[in-house]
Image 1 (tube, rainbow, N blue to C red):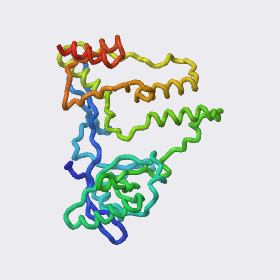
Image 2: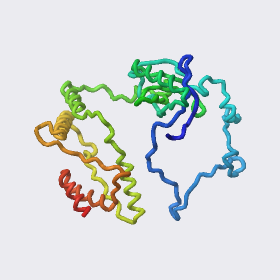
Image 3: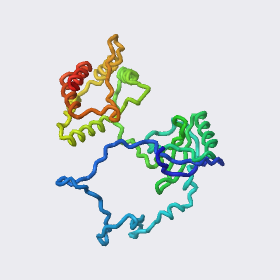
Length: 310
């Protein structure tokens, strides 16, 4: 269980549910250090006071708000003692239909873990109420120095808290929509058929290929090996005019072929293995990449990997 980020309670009418907030996601990005290119020394950020040009330590740094040309100091203790009912509580304010929430307003996600045996029954009560009503709860809570709007829903038996943007924090897209153009019914039908052909039920097969390629480059450079060959750009040339209907027809046919819906064998797209289970050396991947560039057929690509491995 990850380290709790916050401890408090859900306020559900007169029901109180002690909970702890735990992050629901993990960061798998590759993080870089800033370095001096001449000698690879780390380049660090120095915290310097602009008045006396002296480096200050973390315990000498506080918060200040500039107002009318003056800076007003504010301490962490003063922020913690603010007279807010949401300071240590996730206060449920309303229940709404899940479909009524605009996804653009949803931000970070957290799991709410029951804090102790006393929380087990009211936690389960709220969970079952949300499950049976098919609704989500809208709540207010204090987080990182400000009051926030939150959304409570159920995921695999656990209560999830989504941080949300306030209504006035969402920009209007009115000026971004393209001008009105004529779209034929046949084009719409083909677009709907393409969407149907591309519909899947499980997203677990998606993975971050950029991160994997970046790890391959770092491994190759660390071992003094040639960098993996760059992927060919198979996109259309810039400025090329696309026949929308022809593109839709070709896309639908490709989707059918990939699923073997025209009486042919379905095309099997090999999933790249996880780095934790089957890490390939950069040299082997580079060889396989060069051979797969010469032929896009899956069978030849597999044969190229076998020759490379031998």
